[in-house]
Length: 274
Image 1 (cartoon, rainbow, N blue to C red):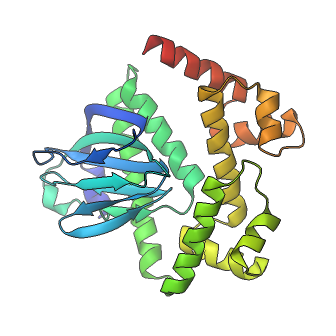
Image 2 (image 1 turned 120 degrees about the horizontal axis):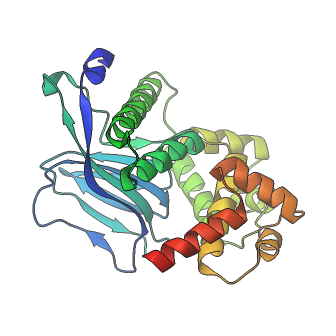
Image 3 (image 1 turned 45 degrees about the horizontal axis):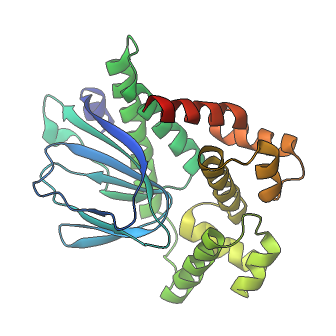
């Protein structure tokens, strides 16, 4: 499997973007896709249908939509999707020997995976000298990550019951819709479960601890506010419940690789140049 991957070459489809889906959005192409589409959900909820199979879309969902597919995707109007998509093709001596990961994967280590995706997106949209080689290597890393994820899934614990799954989905919805500074005590009271039990269920369902998910949710909101509001960085830190701007800036840079001010300035330039 790995040898076939190494002997193949991933070619950019020259079509990639990171977008927040507009109200009423639906993805329903009129003709089948002609290449692969790596499609990742950062925020929001919805569903996608591929060949009569319906998958839930939630933060951390990675879709690998195959050529000749006719996907139909919709979003929850109250929790709109933010997605990144990257089109690509695979050239190999024998394409049948290249194992393609499942068409739907739910990512465990979202920070590591999203870091790879952001790098891939940056490379795909740039003009580096070794752009094609870097794109190829990054796609292979992503495939290996997805291979490992599927292996772990097949050798993992039994799935949650419908009632347990419903409870965790309710908690995720609560975190998404409530105030920016929602805390652990608020979540435990809302769920009506002990901290230990809720954390165990949450980890099994999402692959992330409640602490990791809450941190990610706050940082997503921070990114949104930095690009779409006139609030200062200090005001955003206070709104999100951080003790001071230094704690907020440290956490933001730790998970995004850049400072809040750099992220804000870069976003503003992108809007002006777009």
